[in-house]
Length: 194
Image 1 (spheres, rainbow, N blue to C red):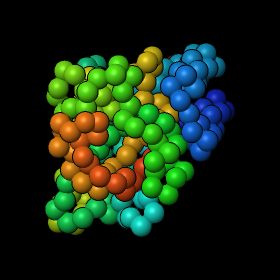
Image 2: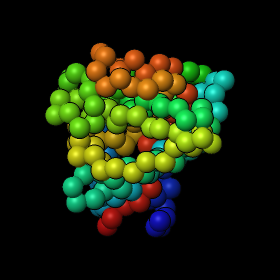
Image 3: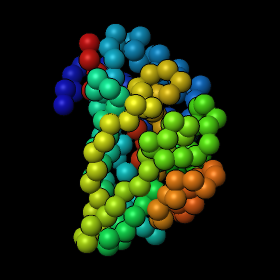
């Protein structure tokens, strides 16, 4: 990944600060505009480094890459239960500071849609379905999502990725009955295109 110029460091500082103090949609959109104005570039890669919530062990990296038909999501999570399934969402606030990650707020849902499956037309922007762990408690997944963006009202920059204790049933409102939050990480800019 390209990590050039002092601007990159400034951007990371901005988004780390947002992640620590919490942020609402207006703050995220302001940060998006300011970062593009300062750099003259567009975000092409963002990363969330997930840390376990209190009493849990799940951790890993989720990478978001801009592609022609949306955002490619690459997931690499460890510390899950053996052969287990876990709800996987983007939450509205980039704040993982609470021991149980409730500080991240609800699912990212800028269009006020019902909760649903990733393939549903009507769903939260943050509804990414489930992760399935193998016998070692590791989950890897790659997919492209057309609802995610790096700018505008559906921008995921500065928001939180959350892994839940239970599977998302893809229908119960408003969260898919996915249970407690076992890992959380803030989505931060990793690469800009000039």
